Image 1 (cartoon, rainbow, N blue to C red):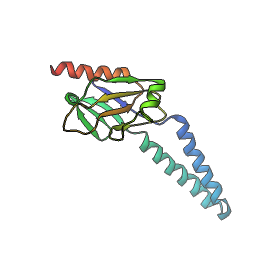
Image 2: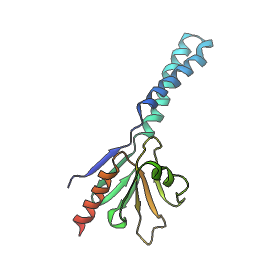
Image 3: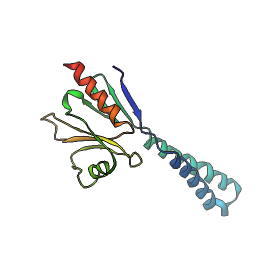
Image 4: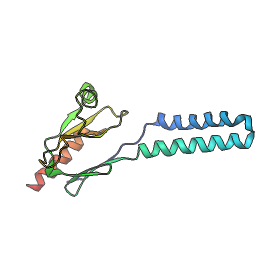
Length: 150
């Protein structure tokens, strides 16, 4: 059984936007001279790149009998049958069908997701919604861990 791992990296357009933020900061600093202009370019680009990198560094893993999504670790034994979401279902479950008690690892730039019911009676969280580029592979990894435990 291969463990599952995915990093939800930000799209290339966000990195381009980071450079544009730096250019905007440079233009704001232009009246103050060349050195502040360069500082605005470098500083603005660096801050925007750090924000983009932090947002796009979250990982989803299936390891050691657990689903690890960001900072959350859920034992696979506490999970129900995974549901692959695409298209309109993805949008529905992250908007009007969403339960405020649910665990949502949402990335709007990823068009597919996996919804997994949480079956632990002591946990008030009804389900986990996970944005993923490979929902079928994640569902298979969860199923493989569930079957190997039995």
